[in-house]
Image 1 (cartoon, each protein chain N blue to C red):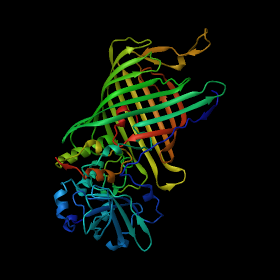
Image 2: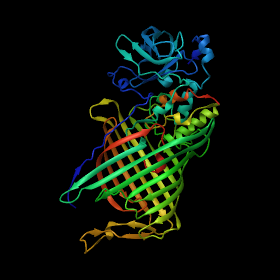
Image 3: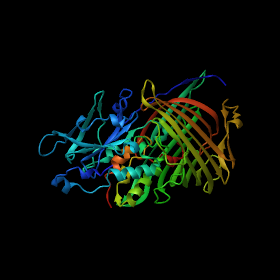
Image 4: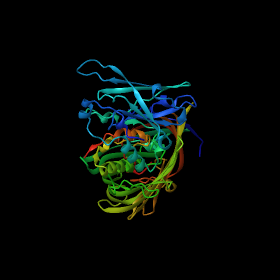
Length: 439
Length: 97
């Protein structure tokens, strides 16, 4: 095989931050200066502000008294006049729960106003001045959380909109493109206290080593998602399983030669590789976890280059995904995070299905080109995808990806291949990523 | 930790206007239970804790319902970059069912 000159098709990366996210400023304090990860005004008592520290946490006996805290509230502009700023006095500090939660309680002499738009909080000690991140205020009836539904994402596993594109320029022949993308959105179905699950739409495009930009696997689904029970408890290392019912979907290739209608109820079982309640976790490290999925895919072949059409058959589906990673606890030059995601899925068709295997390719003497013929079989259809995502800055990442196997509907089998690319990611803060099976 | 409202003085206007909510302490307990993590991890993200966001969101909603409150399920953050603290900041506003 000719050596390939790997080039990268770069993609822009865009993100919107959530109001509740930790600000970079909180992380950028000098070593040994305590870091505050968040401050929350108690919605049931506006005279209480809970301040939670992250690493490095302060020595609690070294924390100064109430007079060292400076808190200003800024009220929003209203009908009565322009915004104004008032000082809030801290009456006392309760540190009795600090050893259990890294959290202290600031008790105010007067409550935070209902008109407060923002709090400016500062702790001044003899050795440092600590400006706190924006405090979370209790919601008001006019709060509109819709503006927080999209946020920048740091990798494939927490994205609902993802695009990874790359191409390899070969010596003396056409470049080889690679596209891996998906997008989706889930919305809860709820009436008051009654919850009926979530419904949404997902789409996925995948091609590997095509000689033209011709994605060989398009999948579009309507998805219904719901926990299997109304429990809120773990069972050992198992989180509550949920059903992903892809109630209506289509699998097709760009050439239009293969079109399948699919309906598929599958169960997803999240597993964390730690059985007990997690104690204190160091920042940056991600506890390894998996999602196991299994269920049937009922397939109606509507159009095919070789397989019989107009008949239903079933695929047994088993899939497993794994994710772990490390994020820099403090800002580092050219290193934000590294994440490993890996997934495996196998489909077991009950009737002969189409597939393309390059090892059966033949030379067409008329055109002089090598053509891979469609074939039929019931053999298992494996697919393995392992991705290492290296974020050198937030929202921008190099991805190193290794894939093997085939995906519906055409099941173009590919040998293990490696690609390098840059990722575009954007996520819903409330997402249903696993409904399309891959991390 | 002593209940904060023993020391806080609410004005008459504040007391009349504030609707009852789930509150911070109950929200912390629910979030930590649903992440199967202790309260030292309030600053950690769901991804760091190895928590599946889909299951977590449903479990938090169920726990809020069990406590007699309700919240818009789509407002519960469940991305792998969401910290437990950010979830607490949202669900403490849950209203009585």
